[in-house]
Image (cartoon, rainbow, N blue to C red; front, top):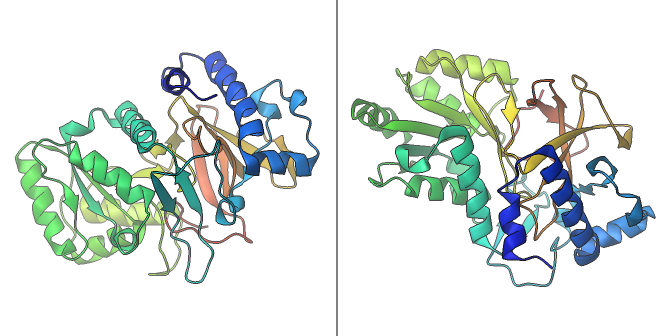
Length: 329
């Protein structure tokens, strides 16, 4: 049974031991109470009693969010988040029991990396996400922007040419400022309106969405740092199917909050994990996904580094290109 006390434990982990203990507890809950996950384990012929450590836990393929209602327990969702996908492709759905839990996850995660969101003016350049309903990214950015007491941030879907002036004005007022945008929109802004944005945090969320050639991260960040006179481009790594995000303060080196952990699986053997420095499939434990599934096998490729950071390097060739997170190489 999932209780408020159990929810609170997710955001109050003090050690690796705490994480492992809670992950195993959530596995036991979800392996029985999540029909899709339970059926998947049965299809594998997996003995749940074999799970003694987090490395023993099987991960649910993310593609099942496209065809199944991945829910732990029986509930009517407060909202259903959907992925962007490509034209004609099947999109994923995340059935959210408690929006308050999603909000707590992204607010506390943001706070750990950047501090209190109320101290920032957040300017969003996410036009493709505003064109559809059900974007978890739009929900997150909107709530973070709303934390500012002066409401000086917001979305600029129709008049992106106004962004440089708004940023300059906020900078002159001494506000902390974040400009967060989908990759192609930031590149378009850099091409049309280069400006001195030094001191402003620029965050790209990945995704060209067919608006131009796919580019490696170094190329994109080089264009943006040059056009905006800044030292580094930050990045956000999240997805519809999860509640939590990893953040990078530059060079594509991502870190996770304490309730989120990355594993790199062998592409040829999904139950075997690779040592640091080797590229493989990204598996994610997101304990905040307690009412969905906390153990997700993504279609992304990446590698872990010895300093607890990880990098995202692309996607498996046979998977749909998702619009919100990656630069494909």
